[in-house]
Each structure stands twice: as structure tokens, then as C-alpha cells.
Length: 207
Ligand SMILES: [Zn+2]
Ligand SMILES: [Zn+2]
Ligand SMILES: [Zn+2]
Ligand SMILES: [Zn+2]
Image (cartoon, rainbow, N blue to C red; front, side, top):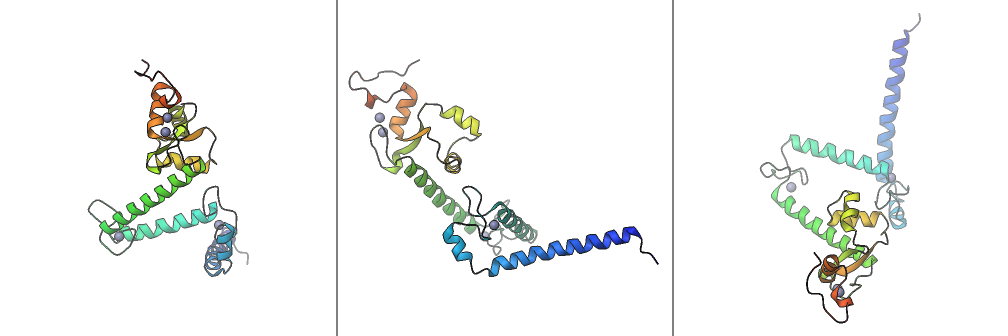
């Protein structure tokens, strides 16, 4: 008796799918039990031992796996109408997370942003190139050729932390420098900071 071709194909497909599923879970187990992970961390590698994507901790494959896992968990918690972060409290009305988690994640984001700003400003020299101001609260990034608006348009970003993050991932392009807000503003309006003009201070911005 011969087995119909369709049936053969189906069994083959089923076994392939099972194999893939098995591979996925054995990969996950291997990741969890891999005792080389601390070493990978020191070497700046992904948790699987591969080279991570530029400016990230994980390789693209692990990142995808991590995100998929996170989304699955969030979907389950959402279905149970629980906070998608802690999975314990009831979420605030019209929100997906609870009050405590909202406050905590905001603080974490602020902390992360501060670190990012510090890192980027440190790379560009950490003090105003015009007046030498070094208090971080006064410092910002300045486009040397005054083409910040066009640059941001090209990057499709409004500025802020997203701009700083992009500069970091792009390897700190040399078209920027650190300036204090005063010098930066004066340079933007007058084309040159009054600090750089020894006499005859500027009176009005050019029309
Ligand atoms: Zn990886
Ligand atoms: Zn929560
Ligand atoms: Zn300055
Ligand atoms: Zn100045």
C-alpha cells in the first residue's frame, strides 16, 4: 500500500516544525544555563557570545527574541487587566501600567537620559568652546556650521535625547562642538558670539 503524497508532505512539515520549536527552546535553555555569560559581558559581547549590534548590548537575533518574549508577556498581563510592567497592581484608568510603575519608569528614563547627555557631552569636550563654561547644566551641542535645523530634518528628529542617542550610535560626527546656551544662542542669532568680538559689541540681530 502506498501512502498519499500529501500525507507524506504533512508529516515532514510537522516534524520540521517540531524540530524548530525544539531548537528554539534548547537555545533558550542553553542561554539560561551558559556559564560563559559573565565572560561575554566583560568582553562586551551579546549574551549568546556573538557580536552585538552597533550601540546595543544584544545581537539582532537575541534582541528580536527578547522583544517577542516581552510582548507576549505584556499581552497576557493586558488580558488579565494587570499592570504590564509589574504584573501585580491594577493599571491606572486608560493606561497600561500602575501609578508606581509609571513613576519608577519615568525616573529610570530621566537617569538614562542624564547619563546619555553626560556621555555625549564628555566626548565633545565637556566645556564651552567659546567661554570655557564647564557647568553641565549650561552646556549643549552646537552645530559648527550653524546647520542644525537642516541636520535634524535630515535625521527626522526634533532634537532632545533622540538626537543625542543618534550622535552616539553614529560614532560622534565631527560637525558638532560643545557650547553653553548663551554662546550657542548668540552664535545662532548674530553668526558670531560677542565674546569673540574684542570691541564694538553687537547691538541688534541682523534683519
Ligand atoms: Zn545574541
Ligand atoms: Zn505596576
Ligand atoms: Zn559659552
Ligand atoms: Zn561666547
